[in-house]
Length: 85
Image (cartoon, rainbow, N blue to C red; front, side, top):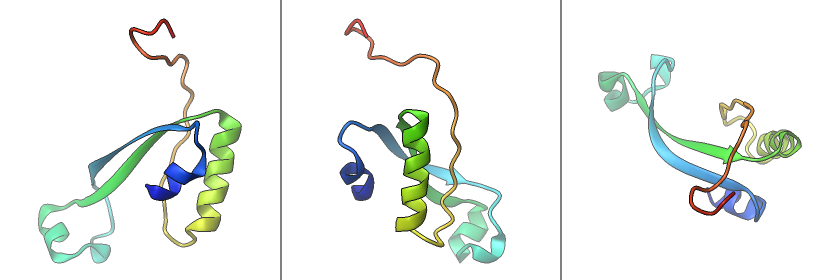
């Protein structure tokens, strides 16, 4: 999370702990094998497509071999309720 905070000042993102399912059981510890899930940190980042591509590139360079999962999808409209945006 600190890396994202330092990455770009204007980037808007949120973070939360999520339950991740479908992971190879051999890579899970005993507690995770019993519960059938693994705790992960999920980020939702709002940015332009070019910024998203640069972010993925920079994440790959900074954290090689970490198998960070991601997806990019369009946001048709965004704003802040109550501010006229």
